[in-house]
Image (tube, rainbow, N blue to C red; front, side):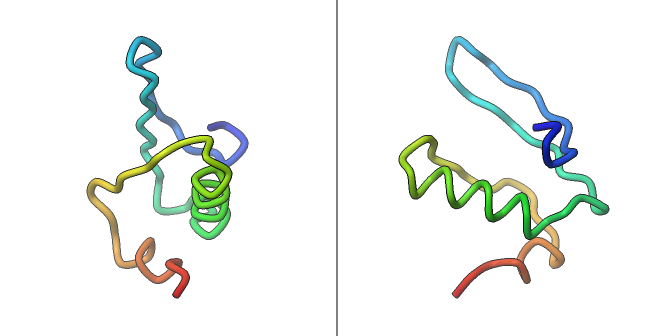
Length: 60
């Protein structure tokens, strides 16, 4: 996920990716990309430990 400057790791065997989103990352851009991919059926996502800064980027 270097396009959004977030380090992460993946398990190709299980087709899983985990992102470690640093506080200085462009959170709205990351959320937009994540939600766009889900809407297109490219992936399913789950959130782990999130911050208040992440929560305020939520649509709705």
